Length: 626
Ligand code: ADP
Ligand code: MG
Image (cartoon, rainbow, N blue to C red; front, side, top):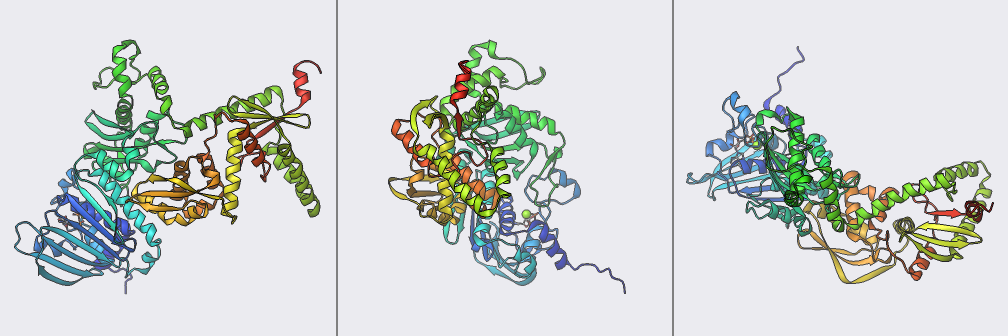
């Protein structure tokens, strides 16, 4: 007997389901896109247990004809293409006729639907792809689809699902993107009985951004409205005060579909390249409309990646679109002074109504915007410059850096070859000696609002106040995470923080972690938190950046990454605001006193020095006394 058999339809659907239907979020995405294709402007989504147990999508779209309601669950049943030529011109979101049969084959499905004309509605019930029952039902125009017990008959796939709350955040994330692509549709997402997201559906993208990302984001936007070479770019980009440490808030749509594409991100990056710090990413929600003939959307079965047949052109158009939005104020004022308008980026035959931005205008813009740059960014400029200076000085003047990373490494190597007791003894003695420097320091003062000068036993020391502050916070946070009790203070006026619904869920899942650090939080509204207590160590620091950094780390590295030293250090860095700040004597004393309690007061976790030592000999040499 031959080994080859033709797969029955059900098996084929189960296999196909693996390509499209990975998790509850993919079910929700397919169904919601169907609702949009059916002309709905009001869609509500309800999930339980992250959508694994239960998903319900209700829309006010055109509804299924009774006959179609059963047919739609057949493989490749679609109303969206009739003949192969139509394929090039589909503007609807789904056209493969795969979603419904795929979903039905791995769950229990109930469909209730009615068209405007039909006297009664139809109800279809399937289990694992088998038709159980078809009946008539009285209902309003539109469609409700319930999907229960996802993957109940495919245990291997079920096993790969994550915890309920993680699946719920994927669903939220999917709805956020769809809602941003469809500001004229009102979406409501309810998870375990709680509304987590609701958009107005008033056709205004800025209101939708407000509903999802909150007021702070919505008030820092620049509108993009641009067309060139039949490519239309619309949406919003954040101004330069709205920067993030990853690309999670860079959202692109091509012909209404959320996608990822390197060309688009690269064009955006280029626009901000002279303004933003390295490793900082701007905010955007941009919708690109381009003739579907020039786009290949079949790169991936979940249709998230696309290719353009002319990537270079798309890059240029996006670059110019964003540039003109970002520098619009400049443009207006530079019209009065024509000499600043030069033509660097365009060829002459191109016609578009925005003026190109020259290097000088970038510089000027930067100046104008300086006051708006958040501290966080300033801090990093500071640190980078300082690093350079210190390095240069150290080389030029041969000032020995008190304990460079190399020396630490060397010492460790030497220590490792000594007998165990000696090492421990030596280390504790070294420690005592080192920390004495701080304990008995005589403070001389502060220079450039950045360094503290002090003296001890005939040596002059220079301490980088910002690096010291970060180190103190880092060590303290690490101790707390390893079990020591934080000193906590109740806030007179609690801090509120706005988040996107998906970030909010991630934060909520980790309330315990922040509570352990001494930050008691509670939910406030649909996607905000109220912070009622803080550990004293973070009292005057930037709490928003601290939490945001934690969330970014979870999003890119999972929840366990919160316990990594690297993450803790990053969070400490983000929170520390003491760069470029005048300190009074008491503040300097306090900083130095706290340094004396550290395990490693001399280098930051990345091996950069915190304190350098300058000997009398070196100074005398410079005065040519030696
Ligand atoms: P596709 O969307 O690729 O056509 P689906 O399996 O997702 O394939 O849907 C099959 C068909 O069912 C659609 O072409 C459409 O006619 C119909 N349909 C699906 N969802 C809805 C809905 N919410 N309202 C009305 N019709 C729908
Ligand atoms: Mg579909």
